Length: 172
Image (cartoon, rainbow, N blue to C red; front, side):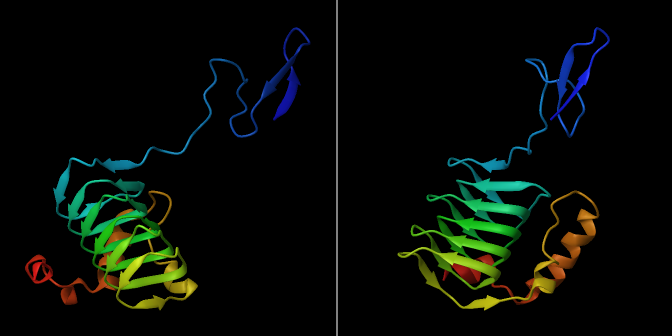
């Protein structure tokens, strides 16, 4: 924060980022609210967002986002590709993320591809763990909206979705 004199010689405090006066009417820039799939909602198809996605319901399809949180009662059937992933619920499919946090309530059936990982005692994982290099992790979704469409296409190519099991194969 900075202080400067106003026209009358009094001090006015401003924020460093906006340079606007502080006060009851001033608004600080905050991070955007995540997109939420509510507990009573089922979505079929690919979800793509340059922001964050919180899943508390059911998703049948792939998820590509900056950050993905799978809630404790959520069910996701598909591939999750993001920069940061927190898995508290059920995931049937691969997760590809720079940073992965798997809580003790998580149930994962599929591979986990990560640069860094944290697994709480009690987590249920059936699949392999593969560490990727920081160069590979840098190919994961960006934090801003710049060039998002080309990043998504790169991610789809990296994921090699041709080899992923179909929804029918996952049912058996």
